Amino acid sequence: MRLSKTFIKTLREAPKDEIARNGALLTRAGYIHKELAGIYDYLPLGVLVLEKIKNIIREELNAIDCEEVQMSALQNPELWEATGRFSDQEVDIWFKTELASGGLLGLAPTHEEPMVNMMKTYLSSYKDLPVYVYQFQTKFRNEMRAKSGVMRGREFLMKDLYSFHASEADLDDFYSKVETAYAKIFERLGLGDSTYETFASGGIFSKFSHEYQTILPVGEDTIYYNKDKSLVFNKEVFNDEVLSEFGVSKADFEGAKAAEVGNIFKLKFKYTEPLGLKYTDESNNAQMVYMGCYGIGVSRVMGVVAEKFADEKGLVWPEAVAPFKYYLVGIGDEGTKAAEKLYLGRENEILFDDRDARPGEKFADADLLGIPYRIVISDKTLKDSKIEITNRATGEIKLVDIEKGLTD
Ligand code: ATP
Ligand code: MG
Image (cartoon, rainbow, N blue to C red; front, top):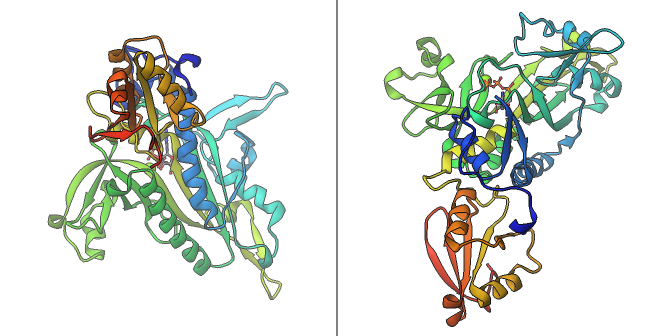
């Protein structure tokens, strides 16, 4: 991509009401545009980052035989009334809207109900099970506080996976596969070292659910972990009763702020029972379908990664989620010509700063945008037939033979 050809510009200042660092930096660097508190547009660079995150998740879920769908955002209240979740007393973050012809619709904050309902059309026999279905979908939640940039949106992108099983053992087995897939996903997203599977409340038949919590000073949650971080609890379940069950005590734990990037639940019959999702077993008896659900906050992950790695100069993307691998600057006539040549055929890998601007301005933007490697070609580097490659995260500089180019 050529910077001269895109409409995005870096901004000297973020909107005054943008108090979260991720929101301010992503806005200044031209990844997002703020509409209202908790409501953001994603610009070309922001879309590229979201797509990288989605593709990592997609690859790992497809590898465990999950199938991608896309469900509607507009919701039939009847389905949610069946589980008691259309009531504002029960779920206090609904956005509701009206049909011109009369009657209410909801804007989906999550998709358990429509997913179970959809499955009633396709699941009837034990031969149809198991089923694993996921989507990337915009969710709507009328959040009270939306002050954490893209980490807490009123409209945000979630990956939600649902699984349906004939037995508890099969649900358990798949749940473990998701745990393994999630570990791979967070590792690939650059969050492997700082993200922990955490015991949290809300499990239906295993008592606990699991959250994936990334250590982050501005995170909204508090977690407690033991010395080797093999046992991690959300504050909400960190009490003597729970700890004694695990044979540990409070003194063994340390607290930290964290952001919840994912959440997995064994729902058992919580939604399949009220909505009547059943199958017939080998002996022709009707049985309730077991269900699990597994979320990842895609846009929140983008905010967490931005927040976690940024420094005083701007964003610092891990290579796997960066919109481009290289930020290319040519200086002087020969440098610019050589840069053009290097850019050719690598349009998806290189963000080429071909603007008519001073090198200092380009370097500042390279830092702000957080592209992993900055390449500079100037008359000076060309004298030795070299290009200069600077690692954004470490500041390490390498001079590479121009003939060798970007082979590695
Ligand atoms: P939280 O406790 O942060 O409010 P939650 O427990 O309500 O989140 P889930 O319903 O389990 O969240 O949603 C799955 C994932 O979606 C969460 O783990 C989180 O990463 C993400 N998520 C939830 N709410 C938001 C939001 N308002 N903005 C961005 N991401 C969100
Ligand atoms: Mg939560």
